[in-house]
Image (cartoon, rainbow, N blue to C red; front, side, top):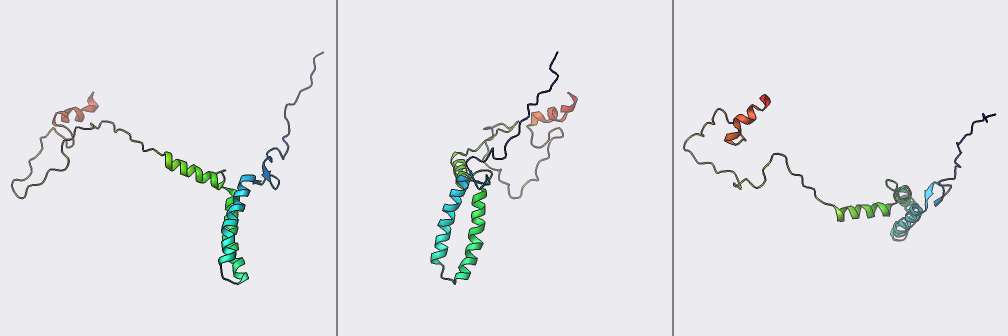
Length: 151
């Protein structure tokens, strides 16, 4: 007799599966927390010691500056810590390259004139173009480009 029972291969993933290397129940990454602590000490100590304000004003100034800085450092940027993000930006600036794309249909190195021809003062009016030549094309290409749809 065949076994008619179905086997389930669905497993539950425990909620603490991704908590390794994190603090406060998986909310904060260890690297972000250490960087935020160092950053808050570097900014908070001068504010505490060097500002000559009453204690209430120091608390207000430190709340306005250190609280957003600490939250920003704990969150990080784009999934990275602040130091990782800064190192990515520095490496990008060091390794960046300028790309040059060649234009299609442009003949490089064929232009012998470095600038526009100088206009003559007075004299004859400018000569009229031939009927079959469009501006911007070589005189021999006038009819070929104009009748391109007929080919």
